[in-house]
Image 1 (cartoon, rainbow, N blue to C red):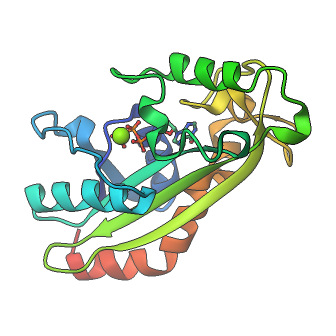
Image 2 (spheres, helix red, strand yellow):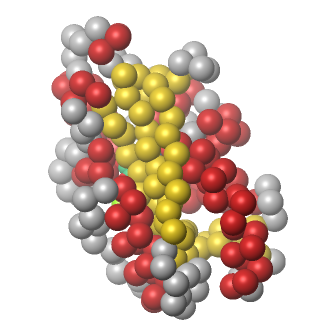
Amino acid sequence: MKEVIIATKNPGKAMEFEHIFSARGIVVRTLLDFPEIPDVEETGLTFEENAILKAEAISQALGKMVIGDDSGLIVDALEGRPGIYSARYAGEPKNDQNNTDKVLSELKGLPEEKRSARFYCALAVAIPGQEPMTVSGTCEGRILEERRGTNGFGYDPVFYVPEKGVAMAELSSDEKNKISHRANALKKLDVVLDSILEKTGQ
Ligand SMILES: O=c1nc[nH]c2c1ncn2[C@H]1C[C@H](O)[C@@H](COP(=O)(O)OP(=O)(O)OP(=O)(O)O)O1
Ligand SMILES: [Mg+2]
């Protein structure tokens, strides 16, 4: 059975990767399966740098091909914040509820046309002894005035997806996994992933 290791401790991301890869007969393992591996410090200044930091640290620790995901929410009215600091926007320990509350309160009273935002996902592929490669994907939308829906994770309840007419957290996982920033980034990996799996024998 083919296997892909994702350098994440986020259960929401883990579920999405499992969902997308299982359709192709690939088993996903995440850091939730390796609790002994310490956290990777996200000291990069871009999503790509952080995705590489995560992928390379875990690839080195396990001696295998590993994919890192660094993602977040970019809000135009906030000059791109929370951006790479999305996970810890309202401080540490990270808390989705507090993070979304902070964005909602910062945008309070702002009219719809000024609430544009996008999700961004950078994926890095690290293979022992090789230079890492990255791909990215986005998903355009706007910030709602209050939470809607209970699916997904993170900022999904406050992110309106115009093409669907609902909040991201109101989409089924099937629907989200067709249009999300993560899915869009993964589509760009599609072409190379099969040959990588062949070469690494994973
Ligand atoms: O599809 C998404 N729907 C809603 N919110 C999302 C999504 N994708 C990323 N996000 C938010 C969650 C978190 O606030 C930040 C990611 O931060 P990020 O450091 O990449 O992930 P994380 O710390 O949760 O787990 P890990 O680093 O172990 O992969 O952006
Ligand atoms: Mg993180």
